[in-house]
Length: 159
Ligand SMILES: Nc1ncnc2c1ncn2[C@@H]1O[C@H](COP(=O)(O)OP(=O)(O)OP(=O)(O)O)[C@@H](O)[C@H]1O
Ligand SMILES: [Mg+2]
Image 1 (cartoon, protein in one colour):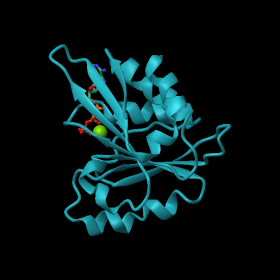
Image 2 (cartoon, protein in one colour):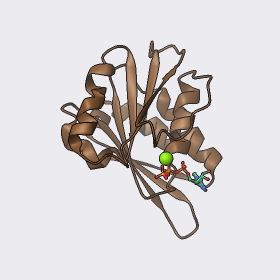
Image 3 (cartoon, helix red, strand yellow):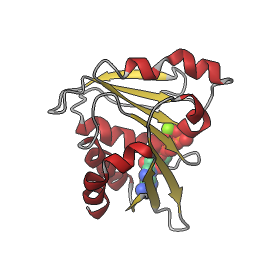
Image 4 (cartoon, protein in one colour):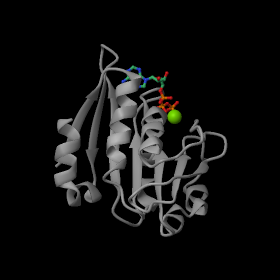
């Protein structure tokens, strides 16, 4: 099963991320996929806001992963924002050790995560971004982890 939400503006994409933040728990890994400019970073900015991150979130393309400290009721201390678009091998993604890092009260959001999905040896949440002919973004949330948050995702997609 998967959950959809449409975003007609960048502000709406951000709001979708902010709302999704409420259903995240420490240890979660979220893989974001979709063409260049689909809205992945915009969505992460919203998640960051939802997790009480104060510093500005920008694309981590050249650093691969950027940690952001946050403050929230869920006890998630760190948002790890990764972008694996430019990695040349899966070994590089393995080296990031995101699976271990999230154990320490963090969550990881990985842009282009679908390119490396085979290395995340755990249940993940996946979000696919599509752009239609009116520039509207269509978000589709799935993955095994999503099935376990179905009640919360029902509310998320209905907002
Ligand atoms: N729903 C939307 N409607 C219109 N524009 C949007 C929407 N969501 C995001 N944008 C805009 O699209 C542009 C690209 O967004 P963003 O950088 O988030 O994409 P991305 O998927 O992270 O791209 P990349 O693959 O290059 O990392 C930004 O200018 C952003 O404001
Ligand atoms: Mg991006």
